[in-house]
Structure formats: C-alpha cells, structure tokens
Image 1 (tube, helix red, strand yellow):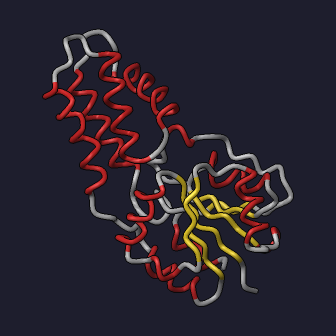
Image 2 (cartoon, helix red, strand yellow):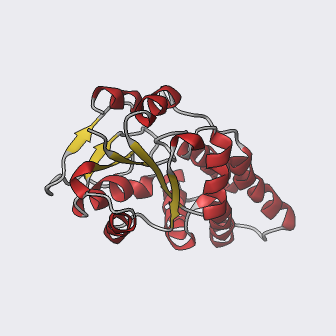
Image 3 (cartoon, helix red, strand yellow):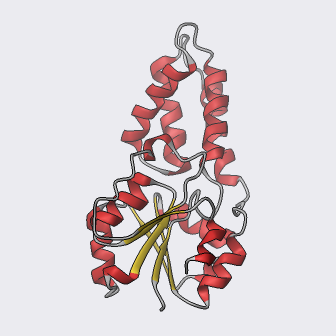
Length: 224
C-alpha cells in the first residue's frame, strides 16, 4: 500500500555534518589554545551552538563567539576573516548525495507520497534542495525551525496524513526518530557515522509506531 514518507535531508540524503567537523578541526588548530584540550574547546563551541541555532551562517557566528571567549591574544580583524572562511567553505561545498539515494528515491517516488522534511535556516536549506537535483521526487519540501512532537502532529493535521500510514526517515534520534514516534508516526532510523553530536540521543521505541533500523538509505527498497 502507498505510504506517506517524510524524509530528512542532511546526513540522510546528502553529506552535511562532515564538513562542519572539518571546519571545527581547522578552527581548533587555528585557536591553538595553550591549556584547553580539543575536547574542551569543542565543549565550549557546543554550548555556543545551542544558543546560536543551525546552518553554516549560525555556525560561523558560533566560531567567532567561541574565539572571542577563548582567544589568548587580542582578536584582530584578520583573525575574524580567517574564521569566517571556515564557515563560508561549508556553504559553498557541492552537494554530495549519499550512496544509493538517487536510485532509491526514484523507486520510492513511483510507489509512495514523498515529503522532504528538514530543519534549519530556510534559505540555506532550500538552496541545498535546489542544488541537490532531487527536488522533483518530493510532493512537498518543508523547512521547519525544529522537529519536535508538535511539529509532526502539525504536519499530520496540515496534510491530513494518517499516523499509522506515515513514516519519518532520518539519521537523528533527537529530531527524526524519537519525536516522530512520540507523535504516533512510524520511523526508520538510518544512523550516520558523522551525525551532529547535539542530535545524539538514545532511540526510545516505547510508542505504538513501528521502528525500523537500517544500515543504508538504499535498504528502504526492501521494505517499501
């Protein structure tokens, strides 16, 4: 039977967080703190990111704020320009679809109702979708500020989707899996080795919805 498939974008359809990790590594090397370990610098950056929000623009702001907090010298304009480059390189990086995504979307498109559901900066996320070359597979593209239980319930109401026939597919326990299950949807968890650390949670399959865990996006063809 046809299902309604809500599909995450970053690190589900294309690589994303690996570029932020590379930028973070470059930033920590540039900071070159004399006493804080890389893990301790990362912890400060994590806390700032929680306040700043998502996307490469806010990530750049987070790097600059972290640098102001931790720099052991007077912060120069040249320092800030260098840090901005770390974030700008993320925005300019080509979209790299994960293995099997194109073929699997083509397969699913003929059988089910596909909705792209991503969170973050609306302008940046929409630009990624346009550049990805896969927008035509989706009947709707939704960019939300957060993926919470209320978000999923609103989507069910907005599009009149029966919860038992609706699946959320993604890599993030915090945003894709746990709140979708709590809202009554089914979920497909596809772990990614570079999922953003702030999206980590224990998966809690304690609700009525079904939960599948797959090793790769292409495996969806065996279930849908």
